Length: 212
Image (cartoon, rainbow, N blue to C red; front, top):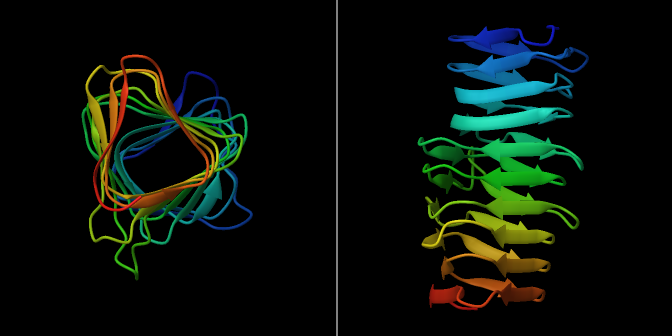
């Protein structure tokens, strides 16, 4: 546990937080290198993933910032309702496990986001649940790697900023709403939508390859 304005930083090696362990306090837990395996809810006020690889089955009750590093293979990371995950900075980010969003994810900065799913030790997938929001605030690419990576959107998947193009290269299944308020969202893969595609005047939703 740590007080407001203080930081516990993991800068190398491997740390394990088994079920029943606690990460609490009003300060920041900064994971900047090595591997962090968390199999317990994280209740500290601030978490910074900035270069480390996060493993385990975990959820967060405080703010989470992801500037670089990896959500590792077979990890299961949940952003609950009312919690915000901010993706920022210039570094690319690798999602090799499952990220489930019931709260809000803001993707800003100039770094790409890549899902990696090998069908084995890497199972990269993004679930945006009903009532959740995924805000795109840049003109970057959401890459696939091996092919079976996917995004399942049952909430609001929205491009809010960036007058250029955000490209989605992963399978995109939509039962919620894809909304474009700025620029272009380019769907460069296959997918299915039984929900809503909507875009403001002067914006574009482009399907440039695959089957919809």
